[in-house]
Length: 227
Image (cartoon, rainbow, N blue to C red; front, top):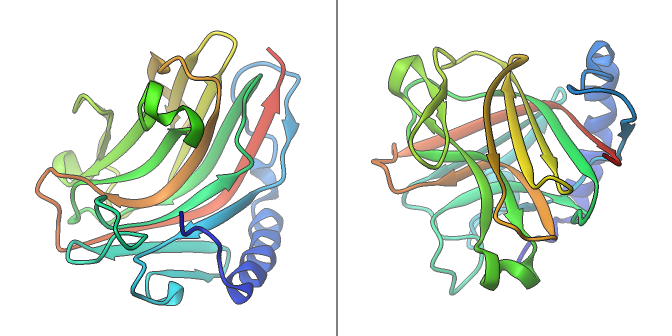
């Protein structure tokens, strides 16, 4: 798996994360659902089309992470059969307790058919439980909207607007809960695995994808607690 970023990109991510946290301090304790949360370090590797430079599909500026692909792009590693992606793969994996991701996101209203967030099964358990427990898809419908696997719309009228996404995963109850702009929009059971990691960004899907797909992310926070 080709996920190791260049030394330059690692330096950029460290620097801009400090800017993002400082610039949005009002949201630093905005996790949803009870008490007992502890803030986690935000660490990730970047995946992008293997035949291109990282900077041609991933930039960081003013605390904003911008990820994009074209539907003609190569996958993230040579020999892979997956569709184009530019994603942040958060580290480390989590295997117990409860984790909650929060970020502000923005996607263009005229771009279609890509995943902007996912809860991915740990590599060693992927064969048994499947690749992912949850994926959030972006579509042009309803003014720009986010959808679950099933195609169910979770929130609309989001195109070209910053929105806050919270995703909570409780490994004790195996429950995933999603909020958009503070409103609960989805809950489901996970796939039963015990090892997971989080990803955000752009990952093309087979639902009439647009020629270009972009996701902007800022103000990333991750919390954990023991339920």
